[in-house]
Image (cartoon, rainbow, N blue to C red; front, side, top):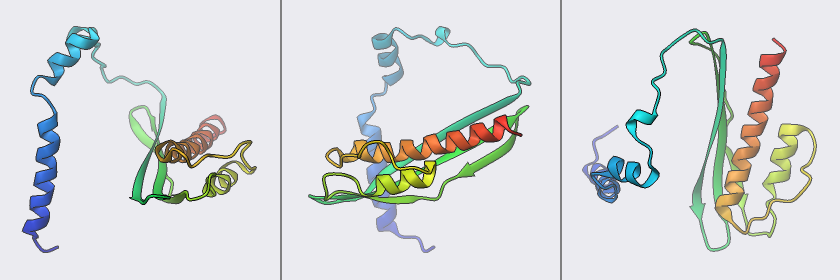
Length: 154
């Protein structure tokens, strides 16, 4: 890929603006406000521990207009057995249109694809971030269910 100084400049500008919002004494401020200190943490020593599983998802509003938004959602799982990765999976990126209707049209399709039956309730498009989060959570629950079945029945 060709070097693009304008792109680099835009990235550096954005990164600089983000850094400018973080105070230099953030850790101290957090400790003072929360009462949590470094000594409150216990160091985890690597040890054989059997099977450990984790699921995480992400969502982003890719495009937004006055009446609708385009969201992308996905979820992933990873499993470690005795400190070695034994399984992992990642769902494809799923596109969802949030709006312009009152209820989300993609939610029943996604839910049915994941769980084999339609959801018990509609998903409102009123709060776009909430709707995107619920679509992501749906994938996370489905991935968790598949992961649990793999762990329990293998």
